[in-house]
Image (cartoon, rainbow, N blue to C red; front, top):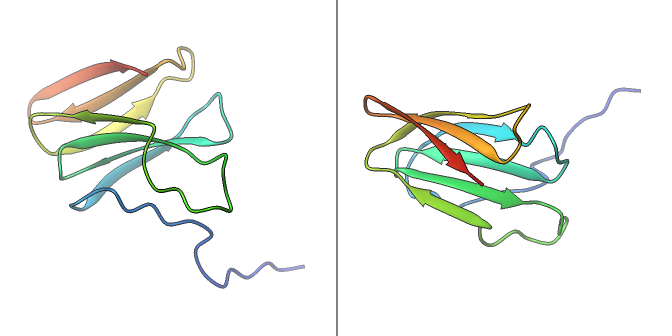
Length: 92
C-alpha cells in the first residue's frame, strides 16, 4: 500500500531566519536539533506529539549564522556545529 502525506505532521517555528541543518538524535526517537541563519542551535523534544511543540528544550546562540551540525553517534551528549570559520562542540 502506498502512503500519501496530506500535510506536515509537525511544524517547528522558533527560528527567525532560514533553517540550514537538522539532525535526529541517534540515541532518541523524539529529539532533533536544528540550526539556522539566526545563529541559533535548538534542540527539540517531540515526545508530546501530536500536541503542538511550542519551544525548544535547549538553545545556543553562536556568533554567526550556523551552517551545519552533526549529532555524535558515539557520544550522544555532544553536537558539533559549524559557523563562520569555526567548529564548536556543544554538550547537550
